[in-house]
Length: 144
Image (tube, rainbow, N blue to C red):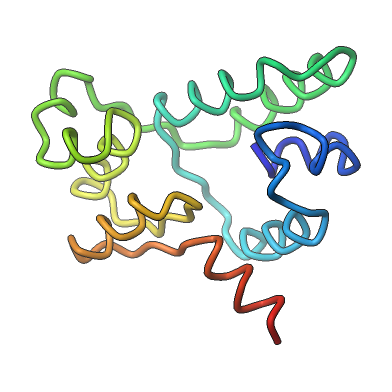
């Protein structure tokens, strides 16, 4: 959500409930982190969560945000795992549907996960998957 809101209206990052913990510098750092990557992989669960968290933006920002979000989705590779399969994965009870779908995806598709969710980050590292915790990057980058 930080990425999409920052691209639509950087000034609102610190004002909106779901992005209040971030700053303009965090958004710029995020853009720098993802710039080298040509492909972004997601799941329907991730997109649904982002959409739901974004639904409380006020107008006219909300409409502009969702227009940008819709355009961005066109460039993502979306990998679907049925919820039934995700619910049977070892990660489901610990992480819930969305994060367990990420863990399940990594069993099929090698990729790097960027997250600000510590539980997901720790779990993926325990399983030997490549993951970066955005909070750790922020702390390292801004403490220099």
